[in-house]
Image (tube, rainbow, N blue to C red; front, side):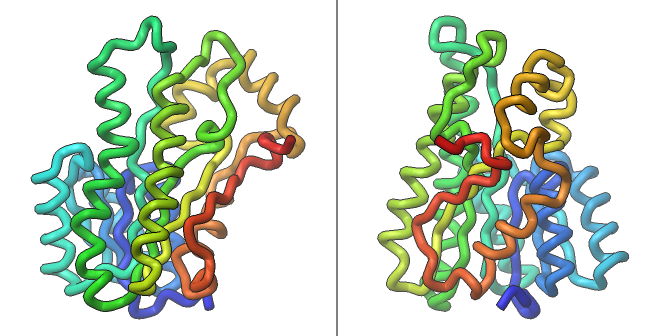
Length: 256
């Protein structure tokens, strides 16, 4: 049920971190992949690695998910190369810090544009083909911070909390609308994971890491690759009757 042979997967935010790891996992399960992000050189490096290690097709497509023309052009390029899109993993995102008092409107808009509008735009241009073929798996990367707030004063992230909560609303709405076309739409909520984004921020914050490890039942952040299982499940035929759901992958941090 987890075999993705013959499937085409598109991954945004695929130049590093969870997106790059997911692209590798898709290819290892037999999928051909299209990696989207703004940093073309990093994308190409990941693509070359995937092709060498798995023998699957992998293409790098430069794309800014917050810009409609960029998204439209990227999807057209993927369809030109592969002819279809079976799986869409919306992973591109930013974790902007700051409270409503000190955030600028520019920073607020940038976070909402990437974290929410990016999913809207990618889905807007990918779903028509999925509807036509009556098949699709869409996985949106939200965050555990969609349902819990940061308590550490120095790590307040109001727009991040807001944008990731919005991802859940969009996920449910799309799931309800497109289920009749055999398209499932689900979301994942990672806790703290090792990635390029967190290595230079949260992992450097000794006080936060000590607090996180104390509060998390697993007593540690997530390791590279530990998101791949949930991503593959929601991207495969194993989840054919799972729709509009939010799966938290946080080592138990959000247990209430």
